[in-house]
Amino acid sequence: MLYLKAFIYKYQRWEFWHSYIVYAVPSMYFLYSGLKARSFGFYNAANPNIANGGFGMESKYDIYQTIPKEYSPTTIFFAANTSLAQVMKEVSNAAISFPFIIKPDIGFQGKRVEKINDEKELGKYLANVHFNFIAQELIQYPHEMGVFYCRYPSQPEGFITGIVYKEYPSVIGDGIHTIAELIKHDMRLYIQSHLFNIETASYKNLVLPVGEHFYLSKIGNHARGTKFLDISHLITPALSKQMDTVCKNIPLFYFGRLDIKYNSLEELAAGKKFSIIELNGAASLPTYMYDPKHSLLFAWKEMIKHFRLLYKISVENRKSGHHFLSFNQVINFVKEHIDYMKVIKNTNNR
Image (cartoon, rainbow, N blue to C red; front, side):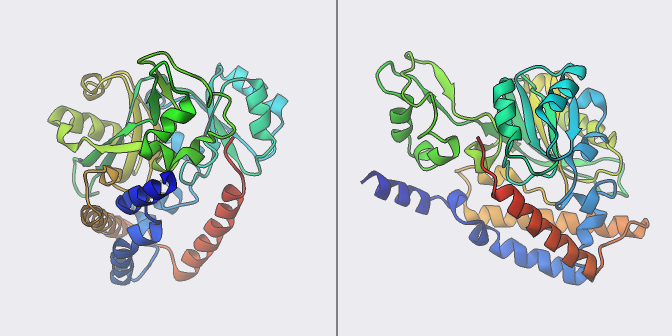
């Protein structure tokens, strides 16, 4: 009966449907934009300082180098198969302490992004790494949001199109049930329990005191179980101005989403106590569309709106001398992307 309830729950909520269905209609508009641009690689010009405009296969480490240090966490690059001893040495030299974050240098849906608590966990992670990766200090601010920012190259000021708040998956103790049992009582968590490796987790039989929160993950990715909430109504002139200031300090950045950890909205709007933990370019989605209150029609509308912005910004940048990808370059990019996805998908999270 529980499996049937889970099936119905997922069937009724488009956010859990296969991406082929979710992206079908907007993808047709993207292809139409490519035909208008006479290049399916028009996105390359959107953010000229990021490889492929940030549409895929871009190095996170290279992107972090474009962000002013005061806005981003300390980050170290490592080539594939770097030894445990070397990683420990460089992390120590950079004054990064446990726990810290490790993630692939070229990411995909939050795969292999992990919080590393000690040297043993680090060794376990490195035993299954066949790609370049980065180590990054763990930002301790309690909140995380995604801010979608756009700016036409011909305009002096940019704008925020929407904000998503990231609610990490968690259970609240009742002093009676185990964590595994609490998950079964929350259908949203239950259908995603495989993401938390609950069957092998050491904490699954733990009984929490009444009212105690236990976070199953603090990786702010929808594909890792995080709930996305649309808080675009909280956009203020002060926040817009601050984000515009930040983004104009990132060279040739015109289109994308900033994933930010912050202490409070008021401090963020004042330029205090925040850190950009990810900067995503042309492939960015308006992730506030995943709020359970929104329909699939709303999501399609928002994706098409942002593809239209992507097209217009790319065309403007082309007039300034930044190029679109040729057909052969697009084909090579797609092949490279597919090959890399096989590497990432064939390695499991801890």
